[in-house]
Image (cartoon, rainbow, N blue to C red; front, top):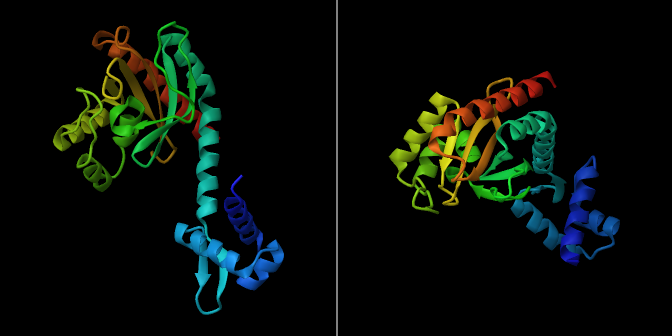
Length: 247
């Protein structure tokens, strides 16, 4: 195991639990480390934004970044718990793989999934990532992001298949359609033979928290059944949103 990483995490934990800012000497004594070693670790943590330095007193304290990460994790766990029943029903009604995704940067992270019972199905894994602009759950979340963010993203869309939308104007128009329809469709834009349909999960304030959707091989998910699948994923998203609002 990486000793530097261990020492850095121990240092961060010590500062996070301390009610007061601490100096290099205090930290060195508390953690049984050399002062030069503590100083190097502190500099790295300051650069990463986990610690801030009081230049006048020469002391250090933890920032709110750890709290932000913890809050994000708690929200994901809450969504996962609230989504379980609706996802199981969605699987039962569609027999396609069901995904629950959140946005992380320009990617979606699959925080939960239920596999299709069919022998041929869409492959993915919990914790896996995909470019948000290429998959249904990603587009369902992106459609409600800030205009400035979307404009910036539209200028650097990466193509993954012949179906990937990379032209800025076309991409923004696609998101406009998603907002109007309430659901997003992936027509082989990430993996050529995989299609998907997804809908956003909203907080009680109307903020998009995540998205739920189904995906499967293009031989089964075709244009004629998109509307039927859309009804199912929208119902699932609404059920999850309602469950979250109830607490």
